[in-house]
Image (cartoon, rainbow, N blue to C red; front, side, top):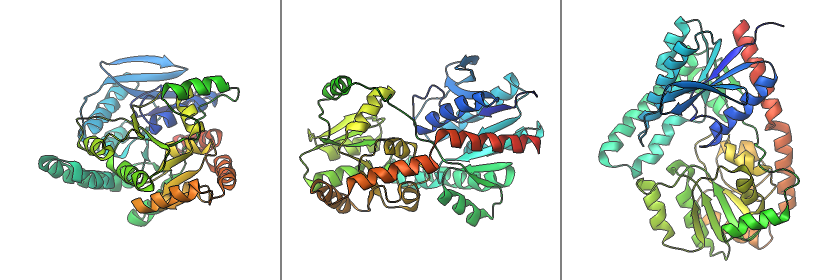
Length: 389
């Protein structure tokens, strides 16, 4: 048996996943790659330089600069890369986000193979968030959009491969930059619940949030403008539903967008803001027992939160953009404006949609496209091909 290939993932907050879908993705893929014979390193944000292991994964910790600006993650990733080079110089391949492309030239000088992983059209995120920034931050966000657009271009020019998590993103990169090195590999659907979960446990969790099964709509995601939570709230209020609307996310009252959402809620007792839930069982119970799930993300590609929800075969009301249609296809219903969402809610509660067919289609999509074992196999094949080329 030959030496295990050494692969490093840069750009996540760290594992175990306690932030978002990308961290869950890294954890799920890393565990499977270890079982396939790879040696895996994951950089983690921390308060000091150190190294340890977690379920066989080598974690390389670097100090993180905390803040709310878009430049901080970039600085953290730069620091993580250089710390990784010093502490683990024999790594064969590094997968990193597009915002640290300037470091790629240095990595290539050290003989490293580089993969850039895109999670959507990042520069558009800043444009959507801009309206909630102060004048000074608006100017900085313009510079940030320009920088991220440049990094997107350089990613396809300087890396050995670019991973797109949706076919729509792959097509966008190929058409925009005549790219030949873009590979499509989606996210998988993270299992949250064991099959033997007790009904009493589900009831206990729901009661702790003052909820009843089938009596609430649900959204889970980052509280940022491009996820259109404001449109979801407006649509829910327009629908005049007797059910509750539960939003799970990273609410920060110092953030202007969160402040806007709080004002928009207007103390409506049926609209509930919950802080992030990292207990997989609790989150799974909330997902399983919702009446319907609302997904209004507008900047692609494949959303981990969406595919995670599809495991539960509940009705999904989804913002109508190509990235979302690619994932869900006929497994949900689509809307664009707030009144469109309200109309979908009214029709759903009136029994006008085939809920069973939606659930069957969601299961079909998970089996065909968003299976973690299949995703990890694609990563493993790409890593072997690049390192040996």
